Image 1 (cartoon, rainbow, N blue to C red):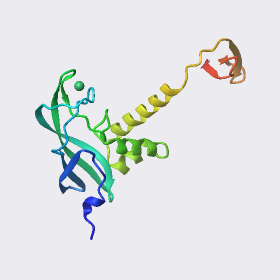
Image 2 (image 1 turned 45 degrees about the horizontal axis):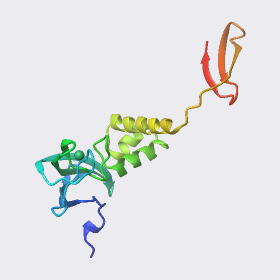
Image 3 (image 1 turned 180 degrees about the horizontal axis):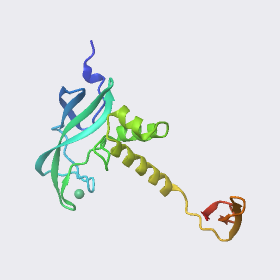
Length: 182
Ligand SMILES: [Zn+2]
């Protein structure tokens, strides 16, 4: 008989203290492994001083269909360069209270399903899903090279049997539409 722990996802640098039901969800308590020195989340340098212990709720991928809430004990460290900072956690998403793998799964699913369905599927708030969607879109836009058009073409065409006109501005070299206005 294999231990249930063999099937649980891996939370690098942390140990599972307990797993208990929290309504339909599972709450998993995690503590930092005692043998591991914390590193500063600002500069990733190891730190030997712990100022305090904090609890953070982090969402993770569902296990056997049950939403997962991680109750993580984190160390606030004293860093020579950054001051008091929370310790770095390799699997935690930087901008939201969830794991990287959950954030990634949500973004992937958003490409195929409407936001509301994704929120229901992962047991997340609609707002959290929208935020991730927007962030992924922005990241993709940032990756695109900025092309500055050198020559412009402007055209006008009639709408509603010539009662209204629409102007179109194109990049003459790429034929990309830059602007459409009535
Ligand atoms: Zn630091």
